[in-house]
Image 1 (cartoon, rainbow, N blue to C red):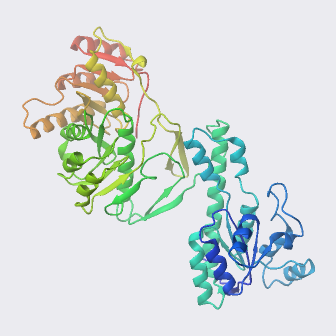
Image 2 (tube, rainbow, N blue to C red; image 1 turned 60 degrees about the vertical axis):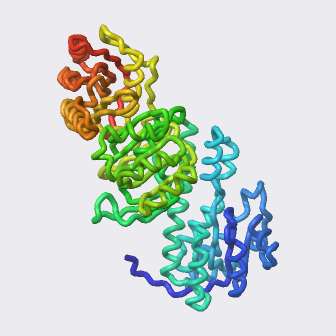
Length: 537
């Protein structure tokens, strides 16, 4: 904790220069009513004057006009001296008096909307380079950093949400600001300029196609303080990065309890999984602990849901359900039949919303669209003392990518199921084994140290699901099987054959591929190689 305690500081002069003019006029009026002199620039000054407020131009302080399309207006000792000189320091005060530098006690600046510009342009198919460059603020960050450094004497605001807190602090302290407030505002100011520079540097990296820049900045904006993390003894918060990708960070929560850390993580996993299948055919993914426990395509969402649920109805209890289309009444009615934590979909019709509303704690999120599974992006993971950063797994295997390596080629239905199963495998923790039949998972083995164990677990899951459905034969009988990585030995493949699989899809690349292929031929299996691995740790 900081031990320094500066005195209360009067607010006599405020410099306001904002891109986001939310609450600007009301804030300016409130400051003027408290006797604060207003100094401003460009469009901010215009807005304040139109509201009937008296405003001095920054050019009155600098004795220089705004120039070069507004690029140069506040970069001047008259401004930075007013922000930086240390109150009560005789040498600083003498210099200020000598050079006619007036103190600026409060700075309210929010920056050119660089992040918003990039996000909007990327949604429209790509950022225009010149427009992006013109939305890089120079004077704003310089003033913010100056005022934040000198928070002993200056209050700095970078967020319109802090206007009321400043006014309340002034009212409580006879038009003065407290050190505690100025310190909190300074910390926020530096975080804001850091996030702003991070957005710019990452944009440059993308433009330059620099996959490993010398410095990698990661930043986010607080969206939600969470009750706890993965476990109750851990603290947690949710930050958004400004990425326009449809998903949990951009969704609107229509109802239900506050999302937890685990809810957010699982909901993201669910929506990314279901997005693999686009919007052409109804698809549903049911997720538990970030792993799919059932994924299916159907002629309707309700059919896809029923097929997905059949794969593992026990694990689906308390799960997350993602849909690739508008949630309708019949699907909502079915989902309401079991305990579910979260539903996420591009939209929900009015009838579905009414049905889900009866489940007060069930969270319903709508995103307005699906993420593109092939779109580029980055993922990051912390390790002790560092970050592991990689490109998102945007790999997609198409029929033309497959190489048939067995004597028997897959049938048309087997090929459809193989591609379906391999797309699901991308979203299952390694080692991953997925049995699928009729474009639905019928057994999933996830996160095991041995691929043989994953095969056995997936087979056992298919047996359990069959019993739950009142069937006498395991669901994996007559299915296909997908492996996220190659079979290092034939035993994993033979385990799948014993479970009833008739065809196999796997990346290949093992030094024992010939042995595995021979085993497949001997078992009468059809097998295709993808040449692409989907490890997910």
